[in-house]
Image 1: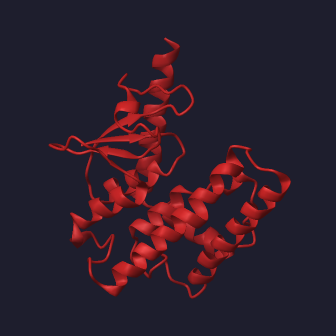
Image 2: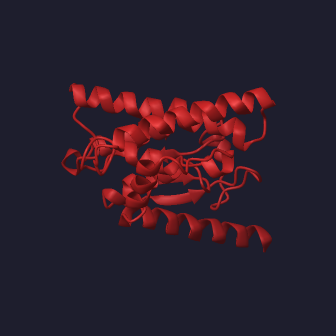
Length: 212
């Protein structure tokens, strides 16, 4: 398997899921600004929309894209991991609901703020949306649970962690103490530390290759 990633993006969520499962895909870094890849391939031929993550599966000509899709697919292949509930259950429906919430109310709300594309009114609107969304997660964690759905780390936790872009977006979350403690717990996981290390190494190697 070959996983296309980009620095400090939601592809970190998929890396963390791979690591939780003990799987080691080949990583390829895509430079979203220079449009180059660490293996010198044409990323547009993989995903013509030019965003990550993208997963090239062995024996499949068409890659999987979208963080939710890839993370859920991987977890479904290993139900013993507990990373996602079984299809057809109310627990799975609520997990899909939570993943969609993170995608639409958090990940997508960050992007125009980070890219400085907003009017003052737009900045206020998107910032308030993010504060509300993160506030809902903070409230969910207020009962002392370790992770969003209880004591089990899931694909939703990986996704939330990978989209904590509030500092880049200019949104202050210091008052959300349950959320802060939750992210700190996630960052102690070996799968998460490995995702960050692997990303840093391939990004550094890619930059060196470009400069050479």
